[in-house]
Length: 193
Length: 193
DNA sequence: TTATATTGGTTGGTTGACCAATCAACAAAA
DNA sequence: TTTTGTTGATTGGTCAACCAACCAATATAA
Image (cartoon, rainbow over all chains, first blue to last red; front, side, top):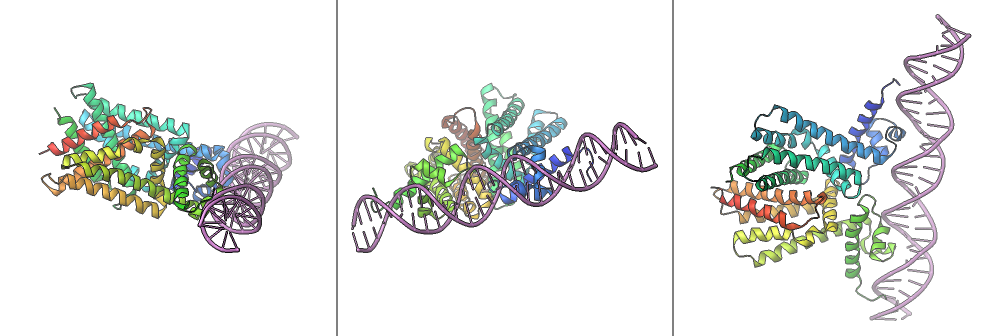
């Protein structure tokens, strides 16, 4: 069984197990044993590959950011006009992968951790700034820098808000209604004056 | 020192200490000892008044909901027109008390807990439904039930989103810019057709 | 080819710290 | 004296981190 080059495989297995564990056991009561059991691996391996529980969490957060960023970037590549690129960002934000309950739970946990863990905060700020920056750029056709900035801010807020509301909604999270609301908002921002 | 009728005083002291403790120690590492020290009282009293750590958390969540609801209701009482009532809801959502870092931290924790704790989820759903219901009612002048519903949903999402973005924002959270964005959004919803 | 060393990967028990909850004892007010 | 409020030590349990030993594969030497 022990072949060389297990490190990336194991790290990924633990990260994915961590996301699932956070979802069904909750972050507060999460133990390295839970994650190991979920991954079907020994508890000691967690420390072998990550050094500490905290490092596993950071790696998990980074994984989420990378996946999310990649999804957006991929969609942006196929979009030609600014309007299409705005839709691409919406699509990347409300696609099925991002709306998986496990992923939502992990993201929310991420936000809470950012309140006390500087490294998590740093990562999350990068994500926020990049999103705003993308949006501002696609809204550049608006008359003033001011209106573009407000359009970007409000659009970003609405993304996060719709996402947050779906965390608890009785309705299982399907992205279509969220997308419709977002598209309408974008249009109204672009129409204005 | 021990006088009769301490129960409500102590309960409130612990709840407020819990909010502060959640903010500066983080919810994950929160101990009843932390809260007791923050309140300047003995650790054993926590269990005397709440029975368990979990019950203290529930009481704290309930406290947040009551304070928030009271703030909104008070402002609604002074508002005459639907447009004024919409502004009243915004004002209640972005007032100084709600933007205190300690309060924001506690609310966010609340959301995470809702993922795994049914009672917290129940409380949070009540708040969400009431907010949407209020908004829908004030948007009733819109042509169709459909447009009012969408206006309510998007407004609620934007409130939550702006609030969530302020959780981490480099900029210290001052509500004025959020209010300006919200007012603009409400106007554009009401103007539309 | 066979024996041996080395490396990468893995396990599960142990340890030391910490915490929620309990409780026995005490102090002040009624 | 009784009731109400309060304390701080104790207990039982849990967890992160550590570690000693093991296993399988490859590389090297005889």
